[in-house]
Amino acid sequence: MAYLVDHGARIVARLVDGIISPYLAAARGDPKMFRILLEKSEANEEEEAEKEAQKKASANHNQNKKADDMELTKDSGDDSDKNGC
Image 1 (spheres, rainbow, N blue to C red):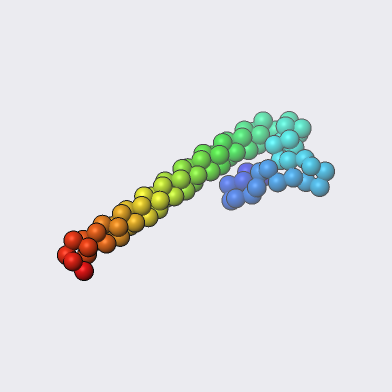
Image 2: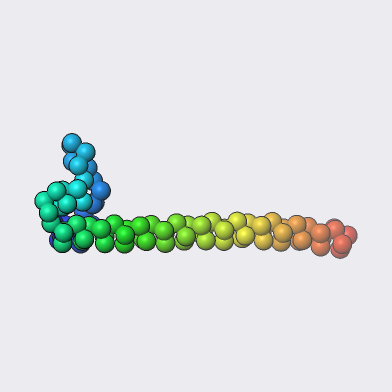
């Protein structure tokens, strides 16, 4: 099972009866596998938090760029009025 986890298996995928892999590892008394699943779960949470932070940063950057573009458009319109156009 460690091989599957290392190669992207979904550790929270449910079986037909709703059981997930951490439960199976604990029920089998397999502390090593349970620890592997727990560590992978924590790593996945950290990756997800990082992705969310990047999305927020990108969204903020895009909003700031739009605001800057609008300000530039506004400013360029003011310059044409000053030149008598």
